[in-house]
Image 1 (cartoon, rainbow, N blue to C red):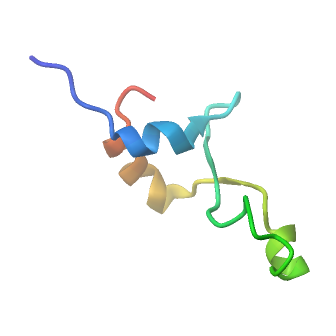
Image 2 (image 1 turned 90 degrees about the vertical axis):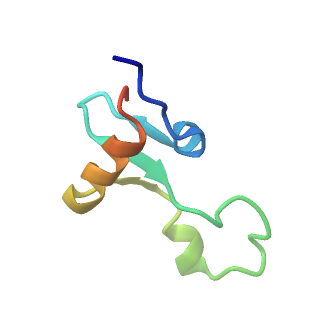
Length: 64
């Protein structure tokens, strides 16, 4: 059976934490920060994927 291909965009953005959960950073948090609100910048944290996203992510990254 051939190997499955990983989604190359997802490989660069999604990682597995030490406890085995799936984490990613939200978009729009890298530049042009002066014009963004404090609330937007405060939400710039790593997010743990919940159950609804988990199945989709595992489909994109079978070897994660």
